Structure formats: C-alpha cells, structure tokens
Length: 145
Picture 1 (cartoon, rainbow, N blue to C red):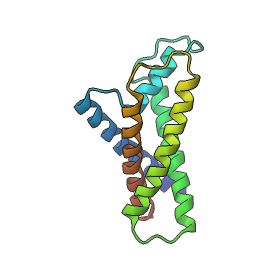
Picture 2: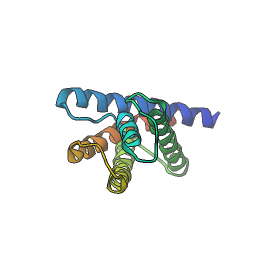
Picture 3: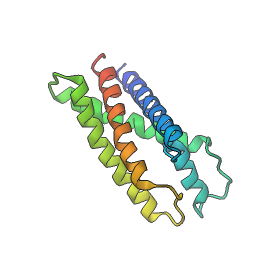
Picture 4: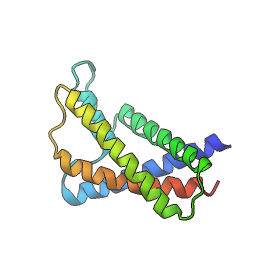
C-alpha cells in the first residue's frame, strides 16, 4: 500500500509540476517542458538513431520515473521526521530537489554533444519553482497516507 501511495504522490506531483512548467512556457515563450527537453536531448544525441519527437514516450518515462523516485525520497524523510507544517516542509524539500535537478540538468547539458539552444538560466529558475510545487504536492499526498 505504501508503494502505491508513493507512486500516486510521484505521479500527481510530477503532473502538477509539469503543468506549471507548461503554463510558464506558454506565458514566456521559453522551452520549459522537462519531458520535451529530455526527448530533444535524446534526439540530438549521436548515439540514438531514431527521430524522436517531443511527445516520445522515453522522455516522459524518464521524467515520471525521476518524479516517483523523488517522491520515495520525500516519503523516507517523512517517516523519520516530525513535521508541523506540510506547506513549508514541502517547499524546503522542493527547493532542495530543485537544486539537485539544476545540478543534474547542468551535468547532462555540459556533457551532451549538442544540447538544445534554450535560455538555461530561465529554465533553471523555473525548474526550482516547479520543484517547490512538486514538493508541496508530494508532501501533501504522503502526509495523508
């Protein structure tokens, strides 16, 4: 039952986070959809021999897989700490995960032979905000278990 709750928290958190990124993308005109960018990285890599479109399943699978993994990490923390305010705790978790996400994306784009040509600074800023929303969502779901 706990695995199902972690899975659902990860799916819901990732969906809401991605929705936020999509709205900011539409409002700003910058590319922020994480799954689409993952697919673009796959498409631009020299090792993958297929023509990968934005909605290819692999980018989405990676994105949601990471979200579920992050939800599991948050669950472990909640099982070992006392929390008084889910919103603040979720914001802190999300901020930390956002910094981790920026580090991960930075490593990926610095080692990629042809990364997408986007404004990475704006992407990283919105990524931290998106992870804060993710943290609140996952925290709320997990504390309701």
